[in-house]
Length: 636
Image (cartoon, rainbow, N blue to C red):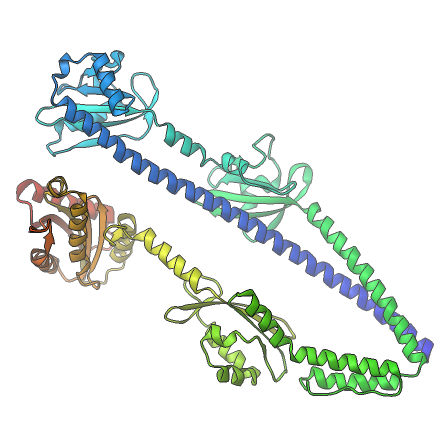
């Protein structure tokens, strides 16, 4: 009997060991892929975050420099308007340019010729001869006060040297004052936003590659290897990378198999790759270790079973198995007490200790979580079990009472239904994140298997609050709280294309009258309060018909929708101006004023109308009002 028992035991242990080895191999390989995918995904997201941060930095810097350059150009115009320009020499103009900290300073007469400048070669240059310079001639025809033109960095007409030029119309006479700057800061900032530069600053593991491919042409735009070789393998070809978003294997150089993860960003495909043989190496080491562990365990179990059989303990083992069955079925109050020899007593004591450890496991895990300070709770239950294992922080995270937790944990079916109801609808744009009340958010990660379910609940209220704050800042103007212009266009386009039959809408462009005088007379703080007061009137319009935004400076726009005719638009505009007339703005401690604004609107009931065209029509109507009357509105 002993030999037959040992023979079958060896066969079973061998089969089980190989099965476990196979499962471990597949599981560990899957975990390697999951881990590598998470690593690549994180690195690609970091690259995207770096690109976005650099772009925002460049945009903010350009905006700041444009304002600074315009201020210097206006200062130059102010000085030159009080001088006889024709009598100024190149040296005097250069001296003035140095005082203003600009690289070039020129004066253009009403005929379009440079009549004075800090560069002698440019004096007498005809601005009409080149596309770059002729753009400034439009300022000669402008009737608006403070007309100006800011060009982006581009080669100048005379030498092809990269410059950024700013021109302002002269006051009291026809002419333009132009200043020029070498855009060193912009070029330096742009150089930091190249893929090769970012990759060169980005750490990679051994033989790991990061690269980017143009989505349209398939050309390699950047590589962590600095493009020092030909990339001809399948893992570098656009048509083989498009389906690697979840991770896939592609052949690289010399037929070497690569694990590749790709992600689309704007018009490019960001990719990360690692040779599969590096992953295989780690898998092989793990498989070998597991094999040795299983071999050791199998030998130990066989020897132990041989000893127990030899001591005629099969009946005792059957009794232990019977009691263990009670325990695994949820009867944790079962006590194993097998007497007869010291080994059975120790085994019984060990099993009882293990059961006690299982019973107190929830409290110990809860204590560890509480010590760590992480707002986290876990739950687990097996199919067919009668009790749910939970940590003590569950009630606090779900905002339910301890009694409610106890009732749910005592009934697996009730607990399962509660979790299903809780996870019925995730927060828009988020995965596994759910809102449990007005200001509380949780993330539930749950794993299901044939045995049961395992879940972890974490409090992500802080993360969601920060994301909502960032989204608000991305789409709202910081000074007025109105929508930013680009987001406004996106929203109005959706509304326009979904207007019901028989209804129409109108785009309204608004411009504050005499705003420059307000700033010049009372200062920019009062000017900001003036803008905020006007924006408050716009924001007070009924949301079911109005969408409002700040375009730039003292220019605003509204979108009035769900109206039956243009008469409704006029009625809403009358109400707006009536509200604006009742609004008083404190200009100083003793003075208040009423805001004056001009506006123009364009009506349509055609859902296929282009929103940009509609806004342009409203702009034309606005200019008509500004030219003729001011302080009122007109339809296109």
